[in-house]
Image 1: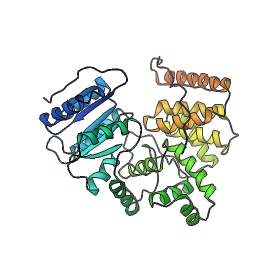
Image 2: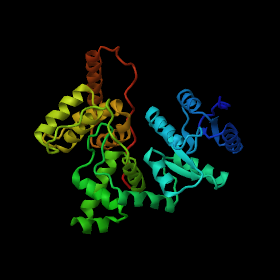
Image 3: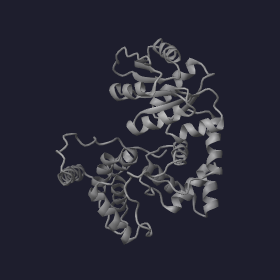
Length: 355
């Protein structure tokens, strides 16, 4: 059984999970981190089941995952995917023996927030953990170049939810492709025959929809789409009708009432933007809040959109939206025949900016 070390967390300090391919390697790395006195809890494990159990029980903030794990090629990347599915809020850093193009791209495909080459110092690793915990991305210019090159070579056709629902319009995807090519807003405007101001507005909307705040985060979010494919348990995809059409609106309403997070998110966007429906901030807030609760993958984007929307609403409107969301949740649970949940709705998020 892999070794686990949990000395007990201290308030305000980062909790770290280390998953290395040997028990000794994991423990040595844990000891090095603990000597810095900057971490509340440091856990170390060398087997996947121990890592998954520790993450579930101890709820660390950051996980360092060795790409080489359990003597199985690619097992570390698979473990990272499992952790992302189990705890979407967990921030991952892949430990790479050699940070070559394939390894770096694969690391960001599976949801990592950073990559760290083992040849670098412990001091650099501490900076990496601090950076990722603060919500930033840790990668060198060369490593980000690998991701950009991969996007240019194999651009995803769409940016979609796990259920296969497109999150961006065709024009927004055109802007994303310009970003992936390394173009500035001015260069993108020239290529798309738009004004620079219009491109900036598109960027703002894209950041809002995807829950990102920088161009780097956008690139990495798009990179994570490379290997995504809906599984058999995913909700149905929308019918082949034009986005923004009345038929699409009917589909969104039907699937949203059934509890499909992607449809709830799209319905919220339509109420916010007045697409085939009157602008209704209360209904938009309601469905963003429900989507945030329904679909962990859309949680960040829903929370970001909800924060921006709340800035345009009165406290009474926000309270009404939250009341209606609670009423919808009770009805939905009654339809499913499950006991009512006592978990509170997420608190009002702080407003985010697109930079």
